[in-house]
Image (tube, rainbow, N blue to C red; front, side, top):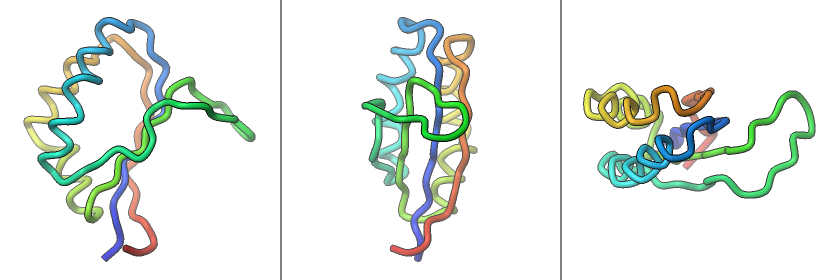
Length: 97
């Protein structure tokens, strides 16, 4: 079964407030079997507009990635970053295990 991924592109505008979200997120994601593949790091925006922070999280499958995002508990965690960043997120299905 193909993996599911959260792919996020982020511009942090309030580092202190965003930091609370970034600190809370890993433990929450792990409850859904997710693990971080990319967190920040160097990047090269070779086409289109880049953002300074990029994050990729892998889940066992697309349904689990969606379940994590849409869970009421994640809504509580996401509130921690409100007003602290501009964020684009897509949930995508991979091509294989």
